[in-house]
Image: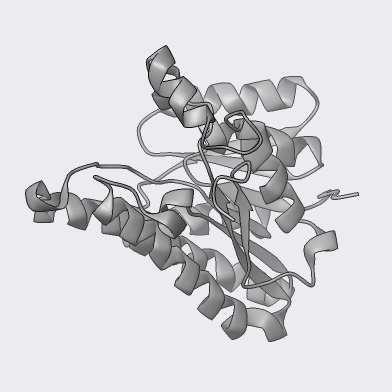
Length: 248
């Protein structure tokens, strides 16, 4: 179940955290994974080498998702090397927190270029190959903050809400070509950020989560693997919220 044998998967921001977990799990399910990075080439190659060492198939491709021309060039190079792209996990994103009264236009523009325009441009570029194959899976990465909002994250929340509308529109636009578009919305996940929290802050956070724990990158990767599979072929335009019950 959820096998991805013969599929080519591009994971943006795949060199660490949730992106790395997605690369590893998709490869375990049989996909050839292309690990995208913008700066951390060594980290991306480490991910690919670890996958290959375990018997999987992986490649790397560096480009900045905030640069549409770079996306097109990167996707073209992947298609040239692997003949197609079947799966896009649009995971790359940035977070810049600020109270609304102190929010800078440059910060908002940077968030929008990466989190929204970048994700949509990746979908546009990869969809060309998917349309030729008449099969494709596009998975955007949102956040619980895009649903619930959060103090100091007005701009970030706006970008994470925007991809919900994008996915729903893409789902309608490409449905007749066998391409689905969905969203995974993580809650609080074990990352460098949560690891840096004080014990008191983390205890208070856990009290807000019905399942009583933060999530893992693997939890998010599992949701992405499902949405990328044949078994999710009748699921499109949906949001899969992986948050331990924090927002329902």
